[in-house]
Image 1: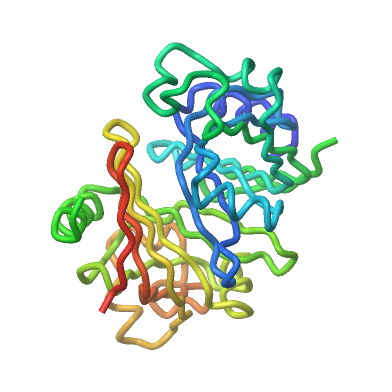
Image 2: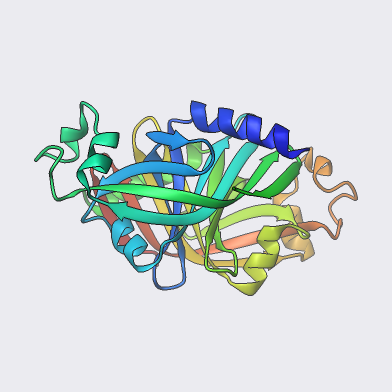
Length: 140
Length: 140
């Protein structure tokens, strides 16, 4: 498997995924996983999510930015894992970037709800697998 | 949401899941995630997986047993995360426990293939969520 195949198929996997698995460190040495809506991505380098400021995940990320984002297609045994750094953002531009009709369900006070946080993940390394083969590469 | 609801629905989620997400520590401070076949579970306390002895995951687990196992239903926004310890086993009884027709695809030398390892996860704590509610509890 070459890098070109991995990037092409990895990007398609991201595009068709409803959710991404986000991995964080819980502060007691255990990895934690949570599915988040796959809202907005820029290639394989930048991934945007939103969550509650009061959530456990935000507290974990503020203490340790080292995280991972994982996409999987369970039918074709294809997966893409990216490791990198996650930031918690609350500026107006970031809030607008991810807001969509229906977000009020999660953030009743609207786009400026203090409990609305935007997460921006910047990937450093990728691992893509398909069937029994896999390839690792740096994200530039 | 009470614990009884979480256990009932969490067990159903495990039962219907084809895969589980397994979270490990990569030794450089980053959480890693990989989907593994949901082969055998005992309630919410013990979870069995199989993988290649030569895999990155086995190397990571041998260095750090602190792991997590996560199940998600992306359509109903239901998820169950368990944190606990993972062991790497190669004894005959464990090998037999997980072996099924078709495993030769992954372990060409058969049930005694040195590249065949069994993973046993023992859960300590659970977090179950459904919609906007979630509950954490200890696994006894």
